[in-house]
Image 1 (cartoon, rainbow, N blue to C red):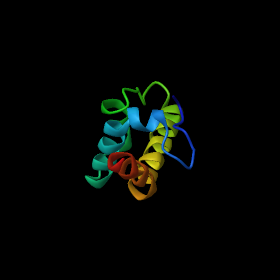
Image 2 (cartoon, rainbow, N blue to C red):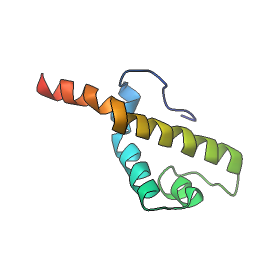
Image 3 (spheres, one colour):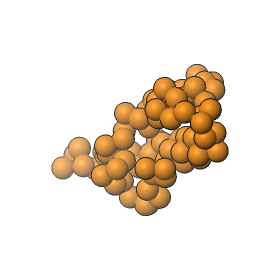
Length: 81
């Protein structure tokens, strides 16, 4: 998807993409260039369509940050039940 969900709750898409979200957060923490991350993690070619690649990168990174700050609580509740 070009954009991850914007739901206030954890979605099936989020659960399926946890590893991707973690890789995006790690890459940002390491100061990796967004184009390299888009190519290696998201399997996009920023040379082909930089605007789209950056949009997908930014939206998924934003969702990854949401997961780290808020969405994880849904995972914790599910793990406890």
